[in-house]
Length: 191
Image (tube, rainbow, N blue to C red):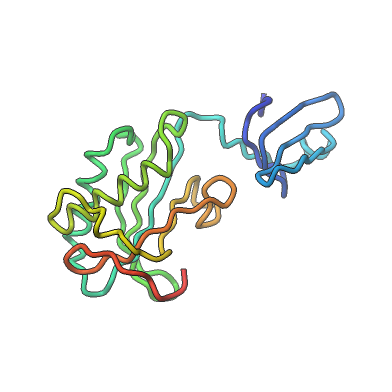
């Protein structure tokens, strides 16, 4: 079976939780609370993406990095934070990749797999960011480093084919720019 009641699926241009599967129609509850009823002929002629088919999902945290930041220190801090974080799967292995975005911003992309049913993705991303900032600044508690941070980074889930910035139905997690000394400051550029 491709999906069942309660699964979170995307069928063509429609995404939501399967409410009913009848002889002629399938009904989804969309992320904004609407009911989408589709003919099964349309459903089974469309590409179906079932987000709840497997226990683990790939999540990414993208952290913008100031040009003056000690990048090797930040990469080591990210690897240490991933190793210390409970629930992160060993296989596939987490990745930490510094890169330059098309708009010229420097970022650190941290990707990892974990069981989304056993762990809250937003809590895990917050803990990961706190540990990265704490390790890169040399402090045990990085909560002061994130205070007042503006919206600049996004937790994403899914494969590379999913749009950047999507966590389920448009939920995102904002963080600040990493600066030398581990201080996060508001981001002034575009996201």
